[in-house]
Length: 268
Length: 231
Ligand SMILES: Nc1ncnc2c1ncn2[C@@H]1O[C@H](COP(=O)(O)OP(=O)(O)O)[C@@H](O)[C@H]1O
Ligand SMILES: [Mg+2]
Image 1 (cartoon, rainbow over the protein chains, first blue to last red):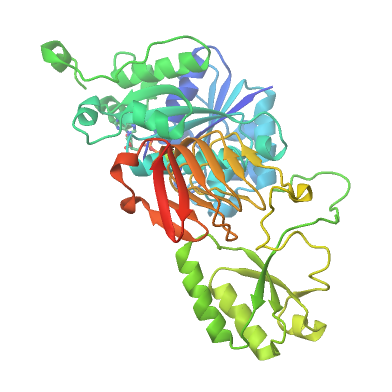
Image 2: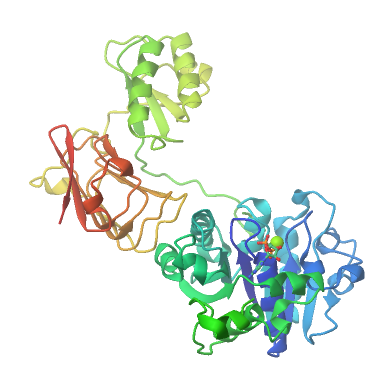
């Protein structure tokens, strides 16, 4: 049985797609057959971040409409074995995703994958709801600021009430917190919420903290999931996230201010 | 959402539900709505979507135009009239509502009759919530007390006809005694509330004593005065 992981947040621009790409690539690199699905119909960019936008022929909506089968639409990643991408449609309207269609696609993917990572669109409307509905796990991506935390809180409410597991009275969706774009120096100045603040408000398990890093933009410009940039802080932070998700113990890093010359040299 | 479940497409069940009754004591719809607005302003958001039964008070003749005006006035205020009581079926049909007969027959106790401790039949089980109440969620313990063993987030709302106990931090809104019980109280382990209210008397966060913030607090009415005190 495949495990379905939704990457969600409520708010846009917090790092869901960055996280989806890194997390899926990390799972595949650890030897798990992984599919990553872009639910952001109309605003697809997972394929860009994964560097496969030129290989898109068919998309998620084509499969739902029966215009292509799953095998035709799935793009096999060239760098990472066992990783495939189901791109969103660029043009269609949001109602193109139907409940039955999504269910059928996820069931199809479950046949030959260990993990299915669902990259949710922003908001709490239909697309976001469909992305989370079938989930077993949720990665809740939050920036350390009040409005992002509030939106994540809202999403946590939906995860505990508007998902298949909630509706059928099964074990709840397992919720994991990922704080992204973290800048310890700004926390120190009181401009950003601290890891503790966010954890206190949301009170769910902290899977990892991703520092604000120029490596993220560089990686996405070159179409490489940042986790594959092993020398970078963000890449290492995502590596920790995947390892913790898979059950390893890892100390949290990148959460304290870098001090002195040594810190400055390694900044960014 | 509807997966294609095989078999029966629906079930029809008899349910005892508690509905709020709007007892109309004045045949002048405007007068009713003006007073209602004042009440709604005391507890913003609390009545949103609340299903209502409209019933004329004794010796109040509510005619069809007044009824129709009242229904649209209620809807405009975010309330959801679902039925009329003690009116004719023609009037109900005209207002597009259902008709409840014998409303005052064996009903759950009237709003004003808060159970007293010496009437064992009045016992209402306390509602216990063990998971966080998140932003956008609302919990209402009708007819009794509410105990929450987790946090109430900013943007969440918890309400009870009786007392409210929160064994986590209270960052959202808590309203006790919402049917008018002035003896209801709120207890919380860590006060960061946006709003607290007892029997319609409310206090906003900006009106709370800074000393009490982040600490364990009890909120109770003394006369018309809402008191917040450390516990
Ligand atoms: N850790 C990070 N450091 C710096 N920039 C980041 C980080 N995470 C995401 N970003 C940037 O934020 C923007 C939004 O990220 P994206 O993953 O597309 O968010 P979402 O999918 O939630 O809308 C992108 O420009 C991305 O490069
Ligand atoms: Mg995105």
